[in-house]
Image (cartoon, rainbow, N blue to C red; front, side, top):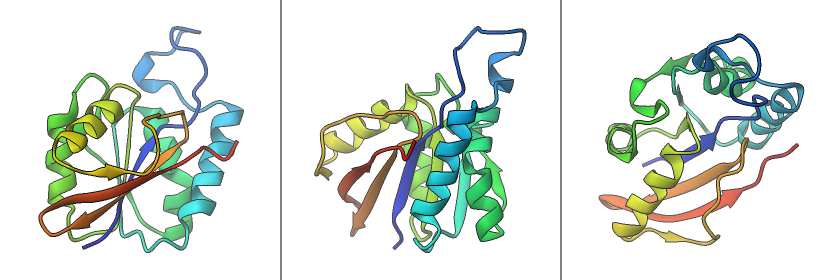
Length: 154
């Protein structure tokens, strides 16, 4: 069983700023630095799957890591903003044999972590989900056992 890396998308500037639809909002300069830092943090982690919300900022966040690992960024609607934890948890279970990275949003990630806490995961760090940050989750038997927080690099 592999680890699950739950990433909040990197900085994408301010919502509603400009004429771009929110789903198409890409990363800011800071966000690209954070995405490069994520690549550096996870490049030796044995990751075999990369799955992102279809929002451009999520796909962009995983792109440097994907290029480094020569893996595709798979898109899954269950990680979309506003979808809650049910689909994300279902996806996490589907990926139980892989070391996978999931990239989602600031509403989905806290919901997912709260659901895992109700199921008994032990988190080393207090709940937080800064843009560009990662939660590393390990499994024990059928469920998730432990987790810790990696802050954004930029």
